[in-house]
Image 1: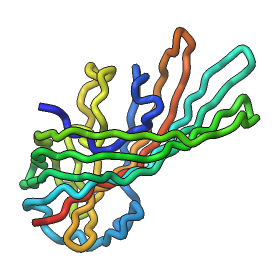
Image 2 (image 1 turned 45 degrees about the horizontal axis):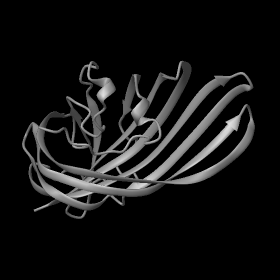
Image 3 (image 1 turned 180 degrees about the vertical axis):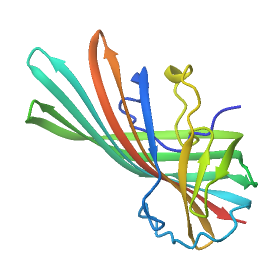
Image 4 (image 1 turned 60 degrees about the horizontal axis):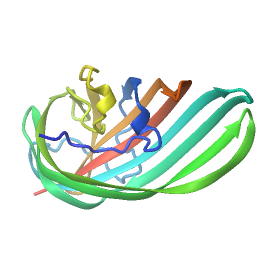
Length: 214
């Protein structure tokens, strides 16, 4: 069973993750994420849904010490998935997903600095096709506004993090018509080694998973 990958987290450095610390924050507002959702969260979320996609906004800073001084790369990207398919069932304590798939075709904006001096920037294409996946994740409903999942269901699988224990993740509930929105804000930090040169990274992602009630 393949874990559902629901939010793209910094494609430029994903492949280099070796150690990572994560902090998950609930959104501060019932009307958040730029989705047009409302704070009318008294609707029961239990039911059957059609997967309607994911939106994301990411930023990563990668810092490296070089003989010429400290270099820094800042990468930002926004995306909205397409070719969305699959179904989701929400029970009183689980989110069960079946054949969920999507595609992302976006552009990453990369800026390079040496010290405080800009060395230029460029836009790079990024494309990903996430194959269909099925599974389930347990959650606890904290209030009409928020859920806490036992695992970080929005985070893409990472082969370097297989020894990292599951981490709970908070999500904020809102609605846009008959579409349920589950939103997160997540920050992360860690260190990597690139051909023996140590580097530090920090990053953030704001994301929304959308599902249309049947």
